[in-house]
Amino acid sequence: MPSSDFVDSHVAFLYASQTGNAESICYNIYETAVQRGFNATYNVLDDYAKFGFSELRTIVFVVSTTGDGDPPDNSARFWRILRKATRSDKHAYAHLRYAILGLGDTNYSNFCNTAQRLDKQLEEAGARTFYKKGLADDATGMEEVVEPWIDGLWAALSQVAKCKGDSDAAKTVEAEKDVEVEKDVEEAAEALAELNVEAADNATSTEGSVEPAPHEVQPLVLDFRPMAQTSSITNVARVTAPVCTATYEDTPVEPHSPDFPPWSAELISSHPSDPSLTPFLATIASSTQMTAPEALKRTLLIDLELPSSASHVDGQWRAGDAFNIYAPNHAPLVRALLDRLQISNSDAHKHVRLTKRNPSIELPAHLQRFSNTSSSIYDILVWSVDLCAHPRKPLLRALAEYCNEKADRERLLFICSRQGLKTFEALRNQTPT
Image 1 (cartoon, helix red, strand yellow):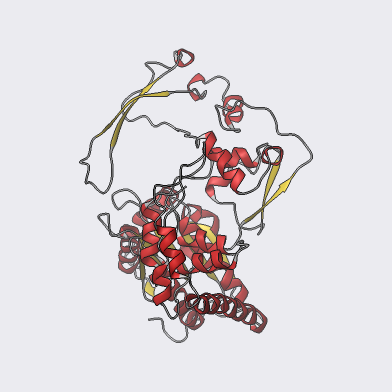
Image 2: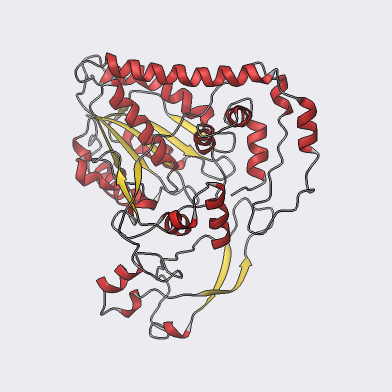
């Protein structure tokens, strides 16, 4: 633990994220810190030169793990300079106090390896923790660790970093948020006793009886009868803070081929003399699963068939070359989602401008391409949003804010709670889009 005379005037919140989950959680913590009155900054680890990592004295890390225990791609350069610094000087970070929140999945090997490695290397370089390490497990629900870890962070952080000015108002805002969440939970808990179990029986007996219309998602079948045996719900996921604003523009979207992402024209114009950078369509000729059916992770051998338009680069590739592969979402799935969101076809294809909510915070990586590109909501859903990923509790918690029916809101809050874990797992197992 830090010494009593170590009080910093600044706190850095740094993240390493492969799919955006760690990035979102880190941003939420940063935003809360600012509201509480801390002088805070927020950056991705690979921007270490931009924010002067070696000079920082108080850091909160939120890092995920990808692949076989590998760090996310947006921290690769950071790891190189960290290893170099720690090899040359065993006291390189003796001035640093830090806290780490790691995200992982115990279904895979090397659980939270990025967080574990980071903790070990910083400790070996003389740095010390000011707050216990948190290791969140996606297999059991990250909120089981994330929410309590965040709740306990503020008391520890206040011992090593001071707030700027009068933070009473900010603390009041945070307290009001907590009260709002508690109110939501209480309303859901009160409604549990009123739940019509007979209706739940009827709902669960319809499995397979509903034939989906073309381009519609198969209805989910969930059993909410456990709600009737629950007196209260706890550990409800927090609402994710918005990071950008989408605004319709009067100017039309610049025409582009629907087969390519909106920014493909930039790739061609920026390197007109290098035909190898010209994007082209490829079809999957064959796909072979190389791992056993029961393996937790699948490895596929995919044979791509190149079109005749790609003959100019045929034979130029060598073993070890890397490719950018853009795999769009299926158009009927995107249209079905737009219908569910009640976005008309004309609005879906209008020119949309994405702007940062906080000028000093960059857009999430998957949206940065669209900040300077003429594009639409349809383009963003086709080329940037993973519509087939397993749903996460923060998403369901956000959806609860937009429910018209009280019963729907209560059920979503239940799914997001500790008591609704089995229902949440049943939801994920049906792989909804």
